[in-house]
Image 1 (cartoon, rainbow, N blue to C red):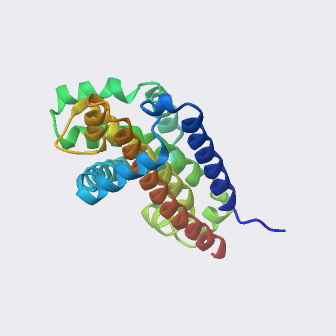
Image 2 (image 1 turned 135 degrees about the vertical axis):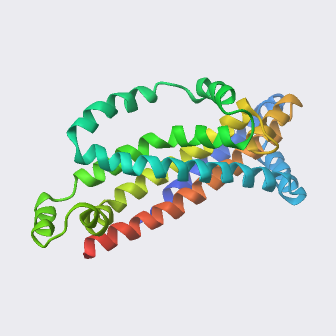
Length: 252
């Protein structure tokens, strides 16, 4: 019997929700540290109805999208260069690996000194966090193209930009989209961290800090739930586009 894939995450979610509710029944004194699901849902509904959670989420997603776009503008060409030229790969890849050891909270204060406060340093922080998966996936996608296909295209007269635009990028698009998919979810985290450290007018990071200062754990959980739902939605859309790209490449 074939079981749809969506059944498994739903079952796991139901188990986690059941354990969450059970913990509140067995240890009601811990409701401050771990509020019950109904309290979180009520705070989430109130925040969405009042509009402040929608406004904060929109700001965070806007910063994430701008950061991801900025990272793509730099990282996709860099990934292509790494795949095509060994000396670029040898020179750049060690620094890319080293960059993953630097936490975002350490970079954020430096961006404030270099750029100032506001949306721009948060966008740059998102771009820095997102760059690695996009570069690596782009390079892997270009390198994985069958050499015989590339050689046949060269014999047909395709070379340079023409080869890149009409052959390499379309064939590597599933890998590039996978990098963007993983990168965008990281960008959301980067935006929240940036808002917490750098500050700003609005955003989910600002709301989380506000709820933390007032001891509103249900409010904090409502922010986390909304961020998780947004991340899952974005991830699913990009996954769908990636699958479409894979099918398109397979047909060709």
